[in-house]
Length: 295
Image (cartoon, rainbow, N blue to C red):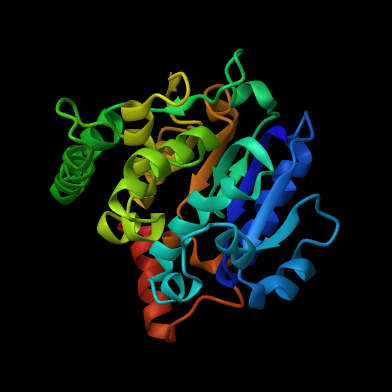
């Protein structure tokens, strides 16, 4: 079993984004860390076409779910896509391909050379993104986005209470995150099994997979905790990117702190496959909102 792989869960809408991600991996992957991309069986031909010449290895979402002894494919199929993908990403470890995996979103891009040491500590266990999200929350307050602060507190409190952990509210993100199979297994053994649950049940209860992993890591201590800040610069909202652009901050500056950048797909809809959806009026409206930094 390998110590580390890269993994991305995707859908047809994001195929051009995944191709861009794969190109950045090809360019900067010093150690040749394997990269896997999982998609629904129905999307395999499309992704093969767009990833020709890439080192990315395609696998089906169905193969991941079938590796789980409890999860019912039909149940996951009935879940909203945003929830179903969390189940799939969090069950990837069951394929036995690696001890740890860097869980990437389709809209991620590497901007500098990276090695295994960017993701694994000297003892071989992963760095875990863990802080209190003050940068994001301060930015939200500054821009009058009270709902962002409220949602963070609500989501953090919900999962903390499930584990009976008092104290500070942590953020276990943003993506990409490095996950270890032992932590997911400890969640399965110590939390889900005694309650006759599987991970699809957990996501239905609280659809925040990074918090399930983070709280399980703190609760069961399956691996040493090596906390770190964000691995990628994540532009959650267009106004954040606009702010950096006005200050002249480029990838050349960011690569001193981060391995890569994420531009949220919600305001990068021109990369949707086969094209940005909606009427011409809705597309124009989204374009104007993006230009104004309101998405």
